[in-house]
Structure formats: structure tokens, C-alpha cells
Image (tube, rainbow, N blue to C red; front, side, top):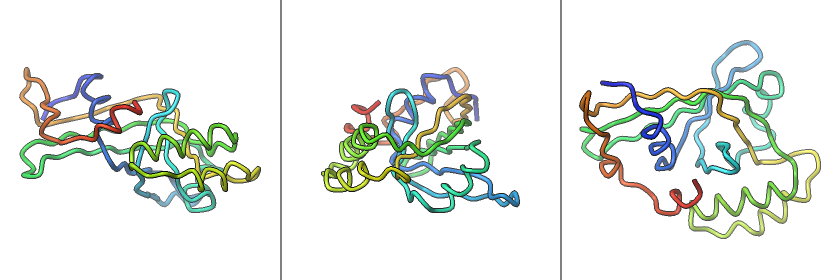
Length: 162
């Protein structure tokens, strides 16, 4: 196991189809949800329930941990990236529409109807944005060797949203 380089961490984040969003409930209980990530304006973003547990927790404490994990099908290659930052739900209509467009590019889906519905809501939004302040990562690549991203597959659409 070795510490990953900044470029390797960014590459893993761009390739992951899922990330775990970790927050803390008011009583300190850990809370986690999985969602499909996309990058927008240098931030890690997700479309999630605008009134769920994450929303409730972030209202009280915006500190968030995002966990990205990639592994080959045979589990011989693996990498994990932790991103620490501040989370917020964004209600700006243009940003919400762009978020749905970017998620659609990753998922190969047309989310224009959802964009129309949620862009008009002034008090809630599914667009969850995390401004990452620190990244750490470990992988099982050789100590002086490069991490082979091909082992993890990847999504061409995801690479485009980065």
C-alpha cells in the first residue's frame, strides 16, 4: 500500500461511478449515502434528496467526507480517495439545470424534466456541492510504480465532465 499522488487521486475521482457522502447527525451518529458524482466548477457535486438525512445534517454541520473507491474486477488493484470539505445545497436555478445536465452526461440520460421541476423551487434543491479542501488517498500500486487506471475501467462521459 502506498500514498497516491495528486494526479492519481484526481484520476480515481473522475473514474468512480459512485461515491459515499459521509456526514454526522446532530447527536454525532455517522450518516452515509451513496450517489453518482460529477464535477462542476471545480467542485464535487451530486443530485440527492433535498430533504433527506444529508440535508438535515449539513444544515447543522457543513463538514463532509466524500469517499471514492475503485477496484478491479478481480480485486488485485484498488485505490481509495477521501475528500474532506464543506457541503451545501445550491438553489440557484442555472446551477441546478447545469447539475442535471452534467449528471445526464455521466448517466447517459436526459434529465431535462427533472431540471425544469427543481430549477423552479426556491427553498430546496437536490444539487449538493462540496468544496473539497483536502484529499488523501492510498492504493496498492508498487511503491515506485504508476497506478494503472485501466484496471478500474472507467466512463468516457465522466472523463468529459471533469
